[in-house]
Length: 283
Image 1 (cartoon, rainbow, N blue to C red):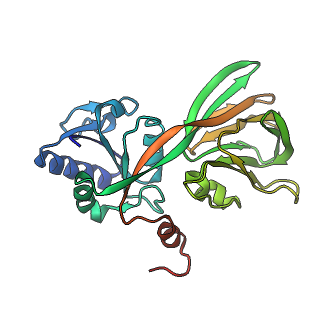
Image 2: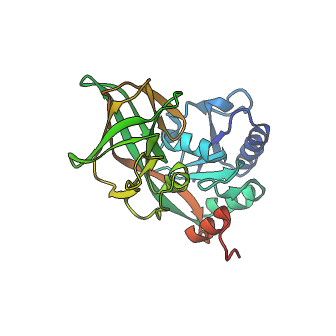
Image 3: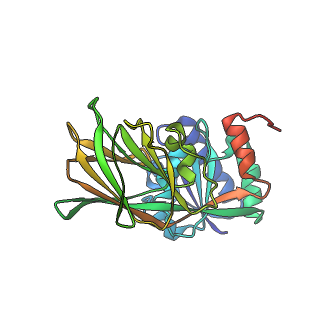
């Protein structure tokens, strides 16, 4: 690897300081550095917009929490550029490397002592009166939910062009395996191993005791139709990209491409679950 990209959580002094220190260290190793344009004013190296930087780098380093990594990952779908997350956030399922280990981990990665895992994303298109009004990509989850009104919404879900259910609820989470430990888990969904190609379907406070989370094959195309809402509802991608929905809107969700994340050779998924979720048997 000769060219490294860096992005840091905005308005976070620790992240900005770490980005400056990492840039200097990488340059001392004789490597070329690009930064996301959000860092252009504080680091004197070439800067690129986040949605363009993937074509210029061989490794992307994310300094922040899972939110910063999700923002980055959506711009790296099918780029085949590995992303290394350095955790400055809270839980950090995706950004697993602590800041205190940053330079040691970078040495291992630059020496080729790492492995990669691919996580698929979801492509989302919203249609109104037969016209596509918005499109986007989610790495963790797609969430249909009531917006700022207190009443439930009603919607239908289809898979393989067949009706799955019609439901009144506060909303619905469609999660990738990477997102199964996020909002979907809080809503009662299962933890899905990242090597399983599946989409979790998790209702949020459904108005029926018989409706339960289900798991669908990742290659199934899913359609949601907003049937009733006392006010405009909301669609959120990774909790970061927001759209307003009207009654009658259709949301089409399908598997998108892959996002490549870096892990150290000793990394194991169940170690992460034990440590992050506080399960018994921590080592």
